[in-house]
Image (cartoon, rainbow, N blue to C red):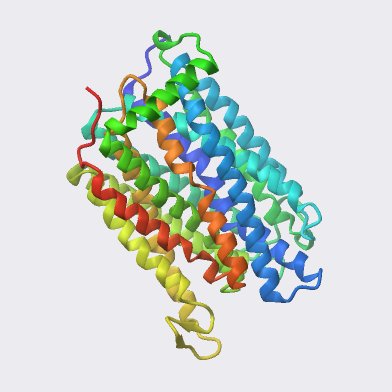
Length: 455
């Protein structure tokens, strides 16, 4: 068999971002998440709660779901990464977790508009989400093999940009051909494709199977062009993996920069995931947007993410990832403060006239910054981790990165759930995100711009 070129391996690696992005853009943030929030809120209204209480309860249910998912990922990610290191194999794990992604997302078709099976559907959503996140650990661990320190920042940024364009196109297809407006028509004024019943919101529910099909189709280039190194394959056990993991965590006390970076990213990536997870829910429950408006907001946000990720990769190459990360965090703190201080009637305590469109315009602007800075932050974070990665154990190192990104992934939704319950407000409920970004910013002071790779 002819050797696969470096350029083709990079393109294959990028296709994972293209294939997997719809789980985050379509399911978590812009279509299924808001759809589920609306279904859950209506479910609780039918049980006698007033609108505000039902909205808060719906957001709390979504928060509890994300908390449980975060705990599962936090406990499993580093161990699986270590196991892959002792075995030297990654592709079989990626294939297995891809199967979880496909099954979980496809099952969301059965989410009924009356909320009668919402707990079962949350379980399916969790199955797919866990598969997507576990697969990403192994994908990230392949980045050091694709280029040297001067190249990986740009490769990472371009990969995120390519992935976000995939999310953009998939979202546009869903809005144009499937997701129903209140009048039963799609964004371009047609009935949902394939004769799907708008009254049962089958066009919107098709987002699950569509995401699964998209992933299966566009993972083909990855599996064709990316290979494990046969020379690194060896037999390993969970015992060896656990021993490697314990040793790796123990060694953090000797690597101040890495420990600081993992601690920082633990908080700011959790905040960013919380922002993605609850952004569409906020638009649905606080600003009272329908799914089409949320989808258009998503197109703007994802387009910004694609462009900014590409630009961020260039800035990373020129200045290094640390200053890029710091600027992105500061901008997101400002954005989150604005969101928490705004609803349909006021902004920063200033009363607005009835029917004012200012909150919509401000939130669209926030969407550009969320998408853009979020894309930059994720890309630069992956690049910064490469500068701290042990070349002899890249998967285990990125397992720790996955642990830092997911060890507290239950905290943002848990705090949002608590804040929502205490305040009885879906708007004030998202305020803990600001505190998490500030914690991440503080811990970056111990991170060396050049990293501290073991040599």
